[in-house]
Image: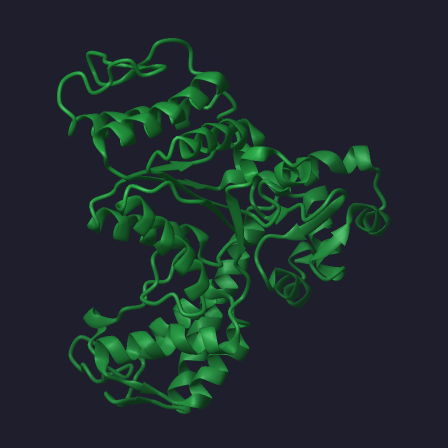
Length: 388
């Protein structure tokens, strides 16, 4: 077999590898958000209102891991900056109970914003003060100070007449410790018509208790649930990049193969697109034989994706819980799982907490446990890793 560097026709090579628009990976912006048009429209409205100096509604994107929440926030920040908005991004952290990291990020963002306002831009703000190395707090970094700092951000945006987009990812991690102060302050800023927009993302139950409690500051918070892509969404996510970048048509049978194999899970759709491009044999058309070759490559990647998650599961009771959860279809009541593994709630509690902390599982409801990525239960049942 010739060296692929010497024989450039190996592996397909009908399309230049350097032009491949697909870049698989958690949090990476895809070449096309097929099937996410409604979610993008909500974000576009927020950005346009901020550009016009209008206080927009806040939007919370929710869904399991790998459905494109982080990528969507990153994409919207890009577009917002292109339109002249200031952007600040915070990634919530369960261990950051005192909001130290989030406070630091907001202070840095306030400093960058104030740099365009000249000397005295921070005058008379509630808690932000000029410091030798940039803005600082006038007191300790706690929930009260964080809430006031969000208010300062809104006030500064008003003073400078510049829209600010604040994005918060993984909001389920910090929970009410971050969300309560953030939304209260942002709600007050909106009442003053400050051009401060907030986009958040988290797992499907993020902020649910705040809505259940009927907090007034949730009135401006719209929930947008991101699930798996339908067949039309998968088709757009595959077809449009091929057409836009290479002028290539993708056969219906290929799209059907991709959707059936990926289940419409966005994280899997991207490796499919990458493989189809790399293995293309015709510069103008992708046909079923190429999809079959691509499928063999993608299956290896998907298997490694699940195997990597399995390797993060602590040995012992956590593995037993994962195996039992797979047998229950990937979403089950803890009581049912404990009957299978034959241990008490108290004994299982550390293992359950470890699975939640590691992002292997999430809690869709009180007393329930579910895998955080689709299809993991099928992989566990087919490989039986706990018995290996």
